[in-house]
Length: 255
Ligand SMILES: Nc1ncnc2c1ncn2[C@@H]1O[C@H](COP(=O)(O)OP(=O)(O)O)[C@@H](O)[C@H]1O
Ligand SMILES: [Mg+2]
Image 1 (spheres, protein in one colour):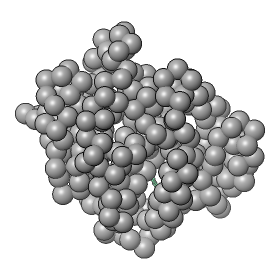
Image 2 (cartoon, protein in one colour):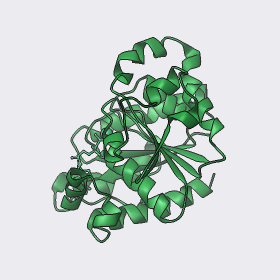
Image 3 (tube, helix red, strand yellow):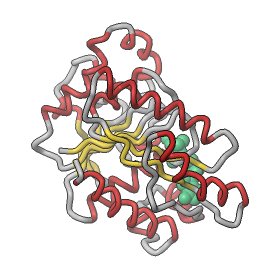
Image 4 (cartoon, helix red, strand yellow):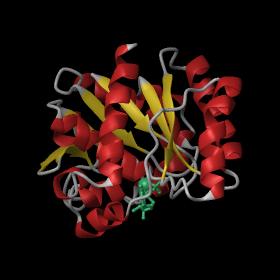
């Protein structure tokens, strides 16, 4: 099993969209995928139409009130360990004990025979949940939007990943930085698109050749709670995410 975290401490950069499309896309090509929603906002959980009440969520798993198996919900979109709004309230309590940072990693080891991939969606901050995800993962995909301070923010997340590598997870890789909601007609987008590979070379991170184009159907799929690949398989974003998955699989294979 390979575990891939989608992370950026900024909100609205298409983390959740990317997590969903990567999970769906990997399922389409025949892989068994487990989704984990570490964001207390639970957007991925909602899209999977998974339950958060009267069922075991990530909250119960971290509190050892259930086994990993018992925390997995099987939905039409696939298997998921649901997020929980209560996760926000326990972050401080969990963060104060070092051993808690490897709870997620240990949980995933128990189901590693069952899945080819685990995809982790993370909240928009650097804290206990993101760090737990980095410790549990083989690699990270970092979505960014071409915004004024996007590049500055990138330095911070990259440095965080390097810290996790040094302190707890030597094998952790940056599979790539992914430019999302990309509109080549916009000057800033075009500049970021063109300069990103060079910045990556200097700062020590890879940039995906694929960018995800801005695409109205992403929002439509989201509001109708349908899968982009099912409903709009030929839209720009679906085509781009399909290419991303090919590129990602090559990176994963490199080990
Ligand atoms: N390729 C795209 N084209 C247009 N809108 C997009 C695209 N990707 C994401 N979005 C929209 O951007 C917003 C933020 O995306 P989301 O995946 O929720 O980001 P995050 O999880 O980083 O907060 C959502 O409204 C989503 O529909
Ligand atoms: Mg999100």
